[in-house]
Image (cartoon, rainbow, N blue to C red; front, side, top):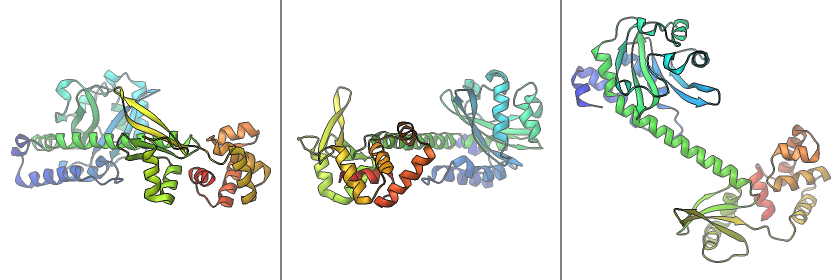
Length: 339
């Protein structure tokens, strides 16, 4: 927050801004978007009947609404999407939702009802009773809009409301950028997990100094069973040959920073291991066929096509295999089969 913005506020309003800023800087992992929690206290701070924020994302169908956090109905997001589809980006509002002009970025402003005339968003404002006075700030990271944040009320907004929003500009931008970073990191981990589970074997990402940075579900199962001794063996595979693992360098900037360590199947032909497991677990011939493809890293759709059965039938067979093997996931089943 800026001291200049705060200097325009009464002491009670400064405390309100400080509370809002504190909530934006208090991060609870898994606690949900900050704007969702901010909507009600922001409405009270602006003395508005509705407040919150919304943002955009580019999709294969064009610019669409990514989120809405405000005291509005569930259909407002659909209405915003329809208005975006019907209008060109430049005329959808009195700012460019893709890249606001420099004069509009991170600058709090008051908007009168007439300012919405001739814009694509006006029909949404009319439907939801928002053709009123409002104050808003376009929270941006450089030229990119992170979120529209503001509030609506019947009476004109003034310097007080502008000062409150302006004081929140930096905390809002910092929090929205943090949430994007956390979301990206979570997505990266989930994509990495999915990719590594396709190997049909235990797999690890090991740093150049021997630290295990990531493991797929089968790898985590193995580490849980073998403990520190298993972790040391995985790490050692980076620097010395091990009949149980293949180590592949992941090269960045010309030097390997990490290594992908993949467990080798042991005990001869994988088909023999499947056959042995099928007998031990009492599987039917069809369940044995499903198990062999499942262990090969194939998804239900591929298994259904290969065996010429429905996906639903595959799901039934997979559930039965899990029950017989005492497993609750494909990864733990593969780890059990390879152990």
